[in-house]
Every structure is written in C-alpha cells, then in structure tokens.
Image (tube, rainbow, N blue to C red; front, side, top):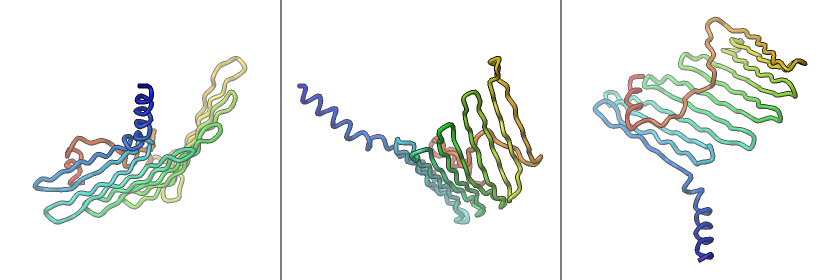
Amino acid sequence: MKNFISLSITAMLIASPAVAERSKTVTVDNEKISGSKTIVRDGQGNVVVDGALTRKRDGATATHKYDRSRTENGWTASGQQTDFQGRSRGFDYQRTRTENGFEATGSAYNRRGDEYGYSAYSQRGENSRERGRNVTRNGAVVYDRVDTATRNDAGQIVRNSAVTRDPTFRPKKKIRPLQVKNPKPGRRLRNRRGN
C-alpha cells in the first residue's frame, strides 16, 4: 500500500508541469467580424497572447500580441496592437530585482506616432526608502518624480516628493499597456470591432 501511495504522488509530481499550462481561446463570428484570441499561461508567470479579428465588409484586420516572461531576477514584457485602420501601438518593458529594491526600463509608442521612454527604481536603506520614475516623450522629459521616506532620530517618518511634469502628460500609477485580461467569450472582441 505504501508503495502504491508513493508511486501515485511521484506520478502527480512528474505530471504537474504539464497540468500547470493553461490555454484559453475566445472566438467570435457574427455578421460584422470574425476571429479569435488565444491566451496561454504556463503556470510559472509566463504568458503569450495572440489574437486577430477580420472585419467582413472590407477584409480589414486587427491584431493583438502580448508576451510576458519571467527571468531569474524579474520579468520582461512586450506587446503590440494594430487596429482596423492599420494604426499600431506597442511597448517593451524590463524589470529587475536588485539587492535593495528594483530597476525598470521600457519604451512605448502610440497610434499618433509618439515615442516614450521609461525608467524607474526603488531602493531601501536601513532607515530610508527612495523611489523614482522618469518618462520621456519624443526625447523630452515629460515626467520626473522622486519620493523619499526617512525615519528621524525621534522615530518619525518624514516623506518628501519632488515632481516635474509637463501639463500635457498624465502619469498612471502602474504601467498597464495592452494588459492581459480573461474576456468573456466574444464580449471584448465585439466591443473592439470599430476601434
């Protein structure tokens, strides 16, 4: 009996990586559009998304690609979307853990042709913490922020922020370009047919 139980547990452990990978395909086919989107997750934090729609009245296509990969010290991601008018937007992003925080870099472009650069960091000290973000648009800095928090001799935490921002730029709290979601069958695809 003991041998049978240990054999079953061993078989489950060997099979677990294959079971961890999940694939989901969402399809749509109506009088206006047809297509599908496939999301593959390997259970280790890696995600691949590939989708395409065709507009039936003129044969125009819209595509969506996304790839996120775990690395030894962080993760990387990239993605691209093209709409029915042939306009594209995309990004790439890298984040690395450091001994006392993280460092991140990235770039992106939008459908208007603007190009963005991004860098960020966070570092902790014995009694302090510092975070910074910097964003450029077409080579010019449009956002720069440094936040610090230090504990003084009385044990109080003192926070300071230094921010420079172009009035035309509105920063987001997190980078979420081309974010991966699990849409309900057909719903999100149909909503994007005219975009």
